Length: 135
Image 1: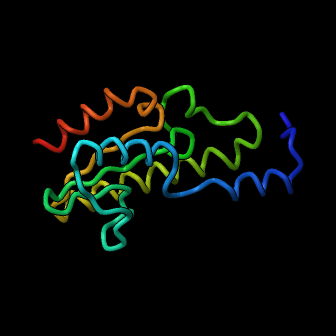
Image 2: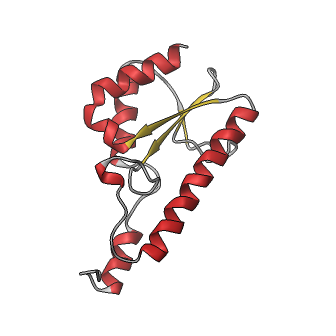
């Protein structure tokens, strides 16, 4: 199945996809801040530059986009066009994610992944994060 968007337009669309300060990330950060949690953002000295960092607790949170990180939900499905490009791309992202989580664990940091689709029920996600932070 061919892409219905011209290659130049597709390139522009893809260039607009952000890596930080995404809507799901901002939603979670605002909710946590309202509850009194304070954190650092995108620490370069940690593997994978975690989205939200709680240095005193040595805990980090990654907010992953379902499509880009190969989640099993309906938003994580691969496109039907160009599977020869997308399958290795998403697999490489998943391998990197696993490597980063292992590296963080090895240096004494706990990590949690929050998926974009989970943010749709923000209250439940925030409760899950609060439980994670309290352990």
